[in-house]
Amino acid sequence: MSANEKILEVRNLKTYFFTNVGVVKAVDGGTFHLKKGQALGIVGESGSGKSVTSLSILRLVPKPAGRIVEGEILYRGEDLVKKSQKEMREYRGNRLFMISQDPMTSLNPVFTIGNQIGEAIRKRQKLNGNDLKEKIIEMLKLVHIRASETRVHAYPHQFSGGMKQRAMISMALACQPEILIADEPTTALDVTIQAQILKLMMEVREQYQTSIILITHDLGVIARFCDYVLVMYAGKIVERADVKTLFKGNRHPYTRGLINSLPHLGKKQRRLETIKGQPPDLLNLTGGCPFEPRCDYSVERCSVEYPPVESAGKGHLLSCWRWREI
Amino acid sequence: MQRYLIKRSFQSLIVILGITVIVFMILHLTGDPTDLLLPPEAGPEERELLRHELGLDKPIYVQYLEYIKNICHGDFGQSFRYQTPAFSVVMGALPATIELTMAAMILSIVVALPIGIISAIRPRSYYDTLGMTFALLGQSIPVYWAGLMLILLFAVTLGWLPSTGRGGIKHLILPAVTLGMFSTAAIARFTRSSMIDVLDADYIRTARIKGLSEHIVVLKHAFKNASIPVLTMTSLQFGRMLSGAVITETIFSWPGVGRIAVQAIYNRDFPVVQTVVLVASVIFVGINFMVDIIYTYLDPRIKYT
Image (cartoon, rainbow over all chains, first blue to last red):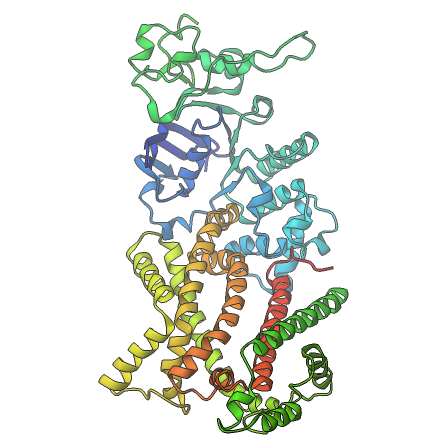
């Protein structure tokens, strides 16, 4: 397989939630792709559709309210949207794996860490007894868990937050997925542990050529880790670019707002910059650009018509009526 | 753990002692047993004599202390009615009650768990609606009415099953269904709500992300977590069954402790009633104790000190 092959291609993905009070368009027309070994970042505020995008790829959108209503998710040319849940089991684990936001709750409290990692290993290799145990210990060592021989028998509540997230990563390693989705893997951890976990994920990526989708609202993490970035707002991808372009040559007012709100080292600031206003209510979206009420550049057209996706350079796509002037 | 066991045993003992006090007091409020033991034409002297013989003329606290002292020596008193030790009267009937209670319990669990789990996997589906309607009926139909209806249908009309007495498995079916009905419904509903809670948890999603089969996700990952509240519920149902046995055994003339208890209460046969309650409470306290220990195996986070 060539390094440039698209291993995942998402086209016009629409995942909606049908609730009692109305339809929430959590993801509304997501199109992007992921190449072998690439690290794709997805940024956006809470509720912008980042997590729903990743759950859609795994086909684990919360039922019965959530549903993929349109679009294709092509994994090596196979459309995952058309697969049954039973068929999806062949893709989950071995090919797609997700590390979720909260390591505290993502491990089962009543089974040992070893048992839970063992399940992931057995998905790939039929090992039993001592062979399995040795493999589990090996996995724990890979994620730098000390005294792994005894930790195998520990329960999640005996692990710290960072150790739990390592255990999750070791599960991912055991599965050796082609695509690893990390949904805010460091949000619930403190800063020093964050750095360790990210370093570990970089090791995984280099060693196994794993493609990574990293969901975060931390632009610092994006800058260090990702090759290519999607910026999401209210269920739509508003700008996508390689990481350098995103930070230096961004054209979407929302992206600009996000980057401006970062604190600058060595620059005296009384207050951090913010994006004024609130994220929109996804139940009451108009036909226009959802960012329009908060946008400094908005014109009349913005509130009535959603801007088309346009190219602003190689691999740099965005949706804004006024990007040429910004 | 050892310290906990000792502490708990001591607490259990206090609970049982408390029960004996309450039962003793309530029984003596029901009236004078000599009214029933002597023929109506008996005079006051005869009555006094019998009262003295049975020890009923002493102050009530003395009677109670003597009762406790005797229990410590293994003497539960003589049945007023049968003139045999009350303990052997109760023990003679206990196997029948245990047989009935166990049958009802096993039936409840075997029926309730699948109903609860399937309803939880597909909430609001036809299975769920059917299962929960069944559970609602099970919890709202009075035991005595259900028992009579079952007799009417299966014993009288269809003639498939015997309506009274103890014998083989055929005799056991109707009383066990009657006794287990309420618990089945309660456990099914509880299993459903407990499973629905757990199935929403992040670790269930993790299990699915690993690509595990739905069987393992539901029966291993979800059920073990959901089983803790279900176990609590089930152990409480044991207590309810012990008391439910009184009605069920009377309807089906089942020769168990419940029926003995009812007769003993009618006859004001104090020693027998006291022994029945004591035995029942020891069993109930014992089951609760056991359940507390089982928790530690189900959930490693539970540690007793």
